[in-house]
Length: 101
Image (cartoon, rainbow, N blue to C red; front, side):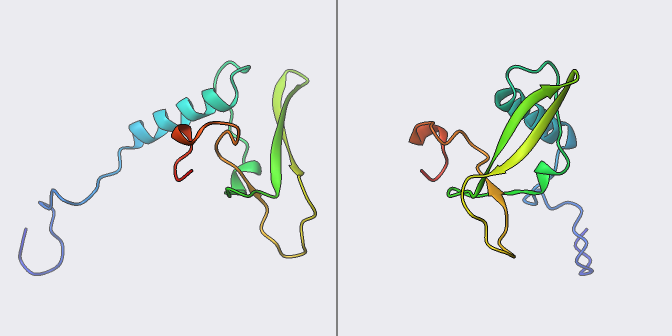
């Protein structure tokens, strides 16, 4: 639809989101992070932390009363107003497993 209104429905170059594929990627990632848990776990508060290659916090996972629990623990002093960040990847993994490493 190239009628000049900017609404080009036939543009095959535009990336398309695939919610099913995105959800499968999320579940696969959670299985790698939580290998001891059956199923998938989402932690709403921990999900608010952004990634950093030099994080100031780390997640600590455990089972509590039969449920999965996470605690975000500072790994160094965090300044007032500083963003709390965690590494989304295994920091001990080799460069091939860590993008940009």
